[in-house]
Length: 229
Image 1 (tube, rainbow, N blue to C red):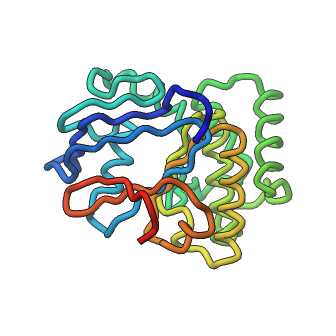
Image 2: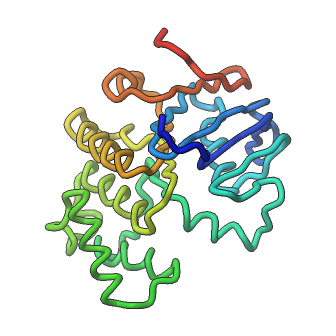
């Protein structure tokens, strides 16, 4: 655990809704800078609903939660975009703009989050592409990339605004072992820089190779697994 004492995320007695009904009751969790936190569980167990609650897409059904200093109980709709700027999100299905190059995908995110200086935008894109080892792919269109390359671009996109917390929803689900290792090594670099990562996964093999705290969504409950079972 990070020596820093202020969590980037805290849930206290939180009830999680899928938008229609409560799917997890009494969530208690704190995530600190530089921590890797896994959320595991079967399909339909509420993992994605929990992620959507963190990003304020789904409202809390009960209890309290704070993300990067923002009270999710009191947050106003107009304040949600500002919260999401502070978060990095890595999607399982990539969600890249298919009609734009890698470079233009990243530039679009920066411009839409308030970056105006073209030189700063260019420098940031170069910096992030170098970090994920994709500087030679800047001109490529998404359909020209492999699954592993697309995921690395998604990680680059999530890092553009230097988030304190990244939520990665099944980032290795569609990758082979080689590309999984590349993505997890990138996540290791992110953690070393002090950014916390919440990784939603069904792949137990990751837990052994890349240790972190583990929370389980099961039977509408949310519990921390203190040891491998």
